[in-house]
Structures are given as C-alpha cells and as structure tokens.
Length: 561
Image 1 (cartoon, helix red, strand yellow):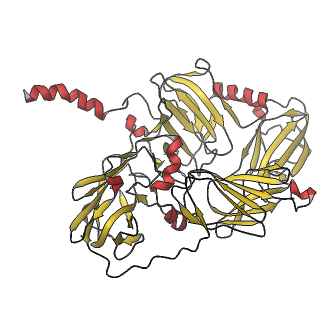
Image 2 (cartoon, rainbow, N blue to C red):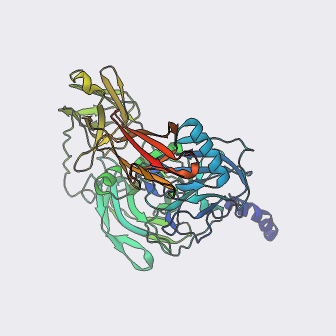
Image 3 (cartoon, helix red, strand yellow):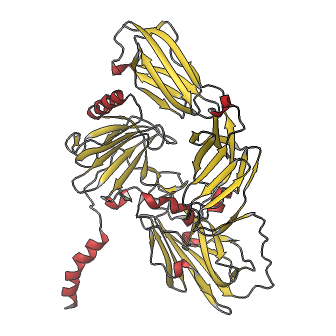
C-alpha cells in the first residue's frame, strides 16, 4: 500500500520541484556558457536581473533567440541596457538580450526607419505581435558593449507574465560550477540596547576561521538578548575568476531554521530594498557587501522564506547554543559556518554612544528642512525607521549627512537662486559631490523662476554649480575638405568638462543623420551605409549642447563618390 501511495505522489512531488520548462529555451550564444555575472548578484541599488554571459572579450557574436516568438519591445539608450531586444514567447515568458552591438537586418531596418522618423537615436518601440516574428535558433542580434556595460558581454534575462525576472538556470541552461561558496566575513548585531555581543551593544566583527571541507567557524562568542548576523559571501564558477553571487542562504539556531534567502525570482519594484538587505553603511564605507540574515522593518523583499522571528535569535543567560549558516550556489555546492554562543551578561556597564546629529526625522512623516537658500523635502517613508541626520548649508554647499543610511524614496533638493545674476541663472545646476575629492556629478535640474529643483536617491553632499563652458567637438577620422569615399564610418569626439553632454544633433546637407553616442569613449559615430549622402560635396553640421544649455557647433565639408 505504501508503495502504491508513493507512486501516486511521486509525479506531484516532481512537478512541484520543476516549476519551469526545462528544454524550451536554448542558450542565446553558440559558445560555452561562461558567466561574469550571476542572477540576483548584489549590485549598487539593485539585484542583478539576469546572467552576464562572457563573449570571449569580443563583440559581434551571433545572438540567437532562445525560442520561437515575436519581438515585443526594442529599447535603445545611451546608458542602462544600451541596445536591447525583448522577445515574447507562446508559453508566456519573455527573454531579454541587452548591451547589443547591432540587430539582425530585418530588425535593424525596422528600428532605423523609426529613428529617422523621430530624429532620435534613443528610442523605445513596441511592435505588434505579428510585425517581427522570430523562429527558434534565429539570429536576432550581435553581441556588444553598449549602455552601462563594463566590457563586452551579453546580458540575458527571462521574465514571466508579471514582469518578474527569474534565474535563467532554472530553465535548464547550465554552466560548470564545482566550487564551494567562499565566506569572507561575519558580523553580529545586537537588536537593541538591551542586547549585547562580546560586551558591545554595537555591531561586532567576528574572526572567521576556515576549517576543512570548505567550512568555517568563529571563536565562541558571549551574548545576551536578541541578535542577528550578517555574512560576506561569494561564489566562483569553474571557468571564470569573477566573484559572483550565491544562490541560497539559510540559518539555524540550535537545529531550528530561522531564516532563508532564496535568490530565484524577484520583481523590479522591490529591487531597491537590496539596501535594507545588505549592511548599507558597511558597503558605503568599506565597499564590501554584508548580507543580513535577519529582516528589519520595511524590508518587503519577496525572496525571504521560512522566517522565524525575522531571523533574530534570543540568547538567554547561562545557555550554550549553536548558530549555523548554510550558503549554497545554484549547483548545490555548499559551505557551512558555525558560531558557538554562550549566554552571558556584559562584564560591565556599556556606555551609549552620544548622538551629535542635529535633526530627528520621523519616518512616517514628510520632513522639510530649510537653511539659507536651500530646502530639502524628504517624503514620508523615505527612511525605513526614525533616525537622526545632519543638515547644514555653507556657501551653496549642502551637507545632508553621509550616504550611509538607505532611502526607500528619492528626496527633493531646492535652491533659491535669487541672488545670482540673470545671465548666470540658466547655467546653474545642482550637483552631487562624489568620492573623497567631492567630484561634482550633474543631477537633472529643473528651473521655475528663481528655484532650482533636483531629485536624489541618497544622502550626502550637494552643491550649486555654474557651468559657462560649452562642449568641445573634435573630428577623429577625417579632416575638413577631404574625400571620404572609402570610409564606412564618420567619427567625432564630443566632451564636456562639467555638467555633461545633454543632447546633440547632426545633419548632412541639412538632413538629419543618425549618430550613435558612446559615452565610455566620448565618440559620436555615423554609418555611411545609412545611404543618406548622395551628393559628391557634403556639408556636415554637428551641434552639441551640455546639460545647462551651453552649445557648440562644428561644421566641415567632405566629398564622396
């Protein structure tokens, strides 16, 4: 009877374990899959939404549709995904291919026609279901390095009908990985002032000790009250040196499961909460990710599972306990961490650190801060919890604490520019001051009368900047008055020293031409294969404008047969 029951239940068990079709999607490239980035890897302000597939340090590799379907979206932008294609399939999933060099001919001609119609390189299109049909194994594009890409690769995603992105390896794509995840750090966090770890009410780093079989331990700790832990961890695949993300983290206290983070699927509207999952202050000051194995207020990530008391443990005086962490990669390779805990009161009274910040922000209320000519508006629920922050203004520089507290919403910064000369007001912008040298980075700034307004997703330092210098335009591969009959491309270099390139426009004999701006090397490129030039003598005109309206015009004559 038990055997019959097993046979009846076995198909149900298998079905529950295989949620996604296993042989439906093929690899988008015809080379072995080697990854530089894995799914849900920890990135700045977001989880990585797909796989970054290495292209052997080359561009121009054939990119194949992963299955039959239709091109449902085409997006071209200077930053972000660069040139990207979205293919919707009959089974309801959508595959995404990003940082492309170019598209297959039928897609390229479709896109260019609309770029010329709109006189814009950046464009977003949504073809109907019968406009751009693609078959399985069809070449739809060529790999590249466009957008915010740090090197040649293909970014590949699979999304469901709700636009949630899913680990493509769950669909049967495979990479070689026989290595155990590597732990780099472990920290303990008393939940409040009633708890302590090693005689401290603050975060404490524990000494990580590697043991045999890729496992780890720490020296026994003393603690009391509620506390949580965080770890630094990464995974390495067999054929790559990249430090990639792990796939699953679980914790156990005296054998009872307390926490699980399963990096399998997430929604884009929750990805910003990565800053609540990691130790944000540690990342901003040390540039290392610590992944918290406890869930704090306001963290609504959907990748958490089986939480017991939000992952916190309660250590009682006189007890001996064991806290364990299991870290796994997608292929099941795992590493364990063991933390022995003795319940013990602190040896002496712990002095609370004195708070010297000058403003207290209630997280559930709108907060407006004013000083001199600066106003900062912090929407309700921007902070995860009530917090003290610093706020002061000096010589048009705003000091809004340090960027060590994560925000859920963008804050608004306003400057009153009444005291500036009328000819300067149009050339002012709000900049975020970045890095140790406080380099000014342009924020998109709007002006209404004497008020400048910008939005930012972080605390930190900001300043009012005046930009009166126009961009520069320099020809790269041609000279004025030369014959260019044998040239395929016409290339210029465009740069701006402060506010950055805002827009550009190029014409030949008065006709708008499609030029591609690559910000990584400051080039602007025109492809003669667009067949815009039909005359022997051609007048080129390029106008480049920075983000505050300073403009430069470049003109040249060239000849072609």
